Length: 259
Image (cartoon, rainbow, N blue to C red; front, side):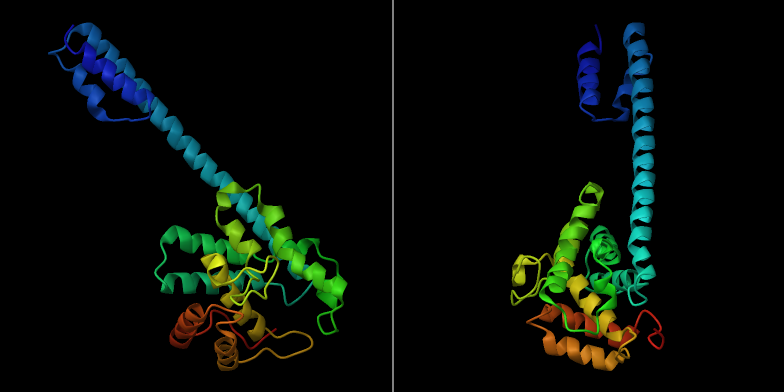
């Protein structure tokens, strides 16, 4: 029968997820009625499958966004425990995003880094109130251990959200240092995920320029000078230089005059 083998080949491709308009060519008058009827039925089925898949993709995207909003709101709830923490994640995410864009990273990676920056301290949700009330006191070993646990706790909180992808690694490694003195794993230089290193720079800058109850925030120039001083040991040197250029050219993201 004319077109039978071609029809079977097209149906096999469709079954493997390879959709195309080729099936509709078999609905022309030159083909027998049976082939045309089958082609039309398969074509209609293919359109319905594509529409269903598109709907599910859109639904999954909305679900991801809703979950992310909920998790972000949870991270922002840290502000209720510490005035300094309020807005910190948002600022770090914004600075990290600017640095990632300056480095020419692709859109998806920039978005991942911004999300990881927003969520980087979510592990502090599980910390005791001492972490938020004893900043100006000498830190005990117990308190240090608790603080150093928060990147792992953050990873554990977020790990079931597999759509976050590499953002999970960035959250767990944002306190690692090139010289290996960071935590929680003591990673060195190239062992540290690139996105985590970007967040580290943004995190340090925001921490230094934020006013706390026990000290005035540093000026932009003072903070950038300190970043350059600790580059190569605590922070990636190339990233620090790129960040300094970004801030020098375009200014800080937020008003640094208040708390």
